[in-house]
Amino acid sequence: MTPKSPSRFMSGLAICATAAGVILIFDGTMHVLLAQTPFGGPRPTAEPQVGGIVGWLLARQSEFYREMSSAIRAAKSDGSAVWTLLAISFAYGIFHAAGPGHGKAVISSYLVANQETARRGIVLSFASALMQSLVAVVMVAICAWLLNASAKTMCGAEKAIEIVSYALIAAFGARLVWTKGGGFMRALQAPRPALAMASAGHGHGHDHHHHHDHDHGPDQHVHDEHCGHSHGPEPSELAGPSGWRRGFGAIFAVGIRPCSGAILVLVFALAQGLFWAGIAATFVMGLGTAITVATIAVVAVSAKDLARRLSAGTEGGGTLVMRGVEFGAAGLVLLFGVGLLFGYLAAERVTCL
Amino acid sequence: MNVARRLLGLVWLAGALALGTGTAQAHPHVWITATSELIYAPDGAITGVRHAWTFDDMFSTYTLQGIETKTKGVYSREELSSLAQTNVESLKEFKFFTFAKADGKKEKFEEPVDYFLEYKDAALTLHFTLPLKTPLKSKELALEVFDPEFFIDFKFADKDPVRLVGAPAACQMKFQRPNDGSANAQKLGEQTFLSGENSNFGMMFANKITVECP
Image 1 (cartoon, each protein chain N blue to C red):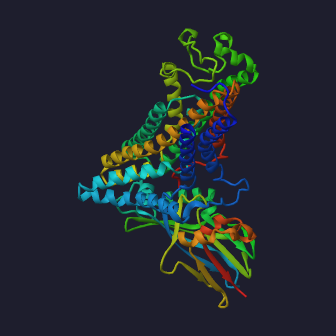
Image 2 (cartoon, rainbow over the protein chains, first blue to last red; image 1 turned 180 degrees about the vertical axis):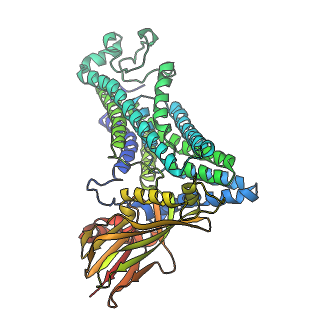
């Protein structure tokens, strides 16, 4: 699969690919980080009115959002306006997910940290978007529709949910760091010649050094000739129930916090007597969001995957690099959680005025 | 080299996406159409700012959720009084989105007074007065109204956006709206970063009121 003695060129490429994967996550971190100055002064928000393509995209996003209220009003008298509403919501969802949301960054980091497949990245992205929509609908249904609670109460609920979500992300990140840290330390200590020898079929003692927290027995392993290389877990391991449970931990932590925009749209639709249209719009919005997040997740996973394959030939060094990347990604999830929880990072503001 | 080409493609894609996600920043969820009055004392000192902020359709409806009224769809000032109270209390966290500088020095505001909400044409308008901690007789007063996080988009009314109330006759007011996209693209050159005055360039997106009293 990989050349025995890879050229410097290949290891260079491996580093590049790794960097590409990390860029995505780093980018997510940066624009949440940059959202707040440490000086307490007004935050230098550069983006809102930039020109060119980005300015245009941003203006469109803003427009889609504003058109939603008129579409809901129109739907009161003209049923076909609902289709317009759904189309706008879908487009808005796609554009909106390209925004600052920490969810996208957390999911990508998790996928990179956990050696996940692109397929699972897509499933997780859709599941978390679905959950976000569901939470928004349930919240508005209970607070506004059933209890006729005030906006102040709803905003209080939003804030409480937000804290729970951030705490869960932090806890989830801490767990990832704990497990990934072990793998990284072992990769650091593993004598490289021994790892190389493993390819000859001997060093079974090292076989599991590069595996992490998959709850599987050793017999599930295929001890073939590339065991000593830093390959990823077999698909059967990934599909195991424990893996999915972990994945759901990620989507729960991220998806529990509803999007402020969805809540506004839902309450507005409810007030117009078209709650069902608001619900439909929310789910279509979630679908759009999922498509964007899934795209980003797939790119992050593919970049890491390629880095792994390319660095596989570097005689044990690749293992170290990959464990390091995973450890770093796990650390990022923890940082996101802690940063959001203590207000160092800013997410989209909840609608409280 | 097949792998290399694929890799380059991937790196490019990742970069493009990263750029896309990095630049497509937050967008507003709330729109406010504002008018402001600068209030002057008889001795010519400015004492405070009186804002009237009209919320957009969707946010007005959201805020009115759960408010009980005698007549459906009609909200009196009394029925909205507790909501107005909530509004000004929440706005405190954001420094009322109003930032004042007198002769280059930052000035502080007291808690708002005379606040109330008005419901007209399916939109809520929040009226409130922000008294300055100390009335000022500065040569130059700069007032900026904006949300640094851009969750709220402040747009001043087309007609009479800013008025001076009781100001000395010699005072001159200038009002500057946020730059539109095309102007920014050109202005965001190196000058923006080199010039000390513009180093905090979030301010560039503010509605800027300047009053000069010689």
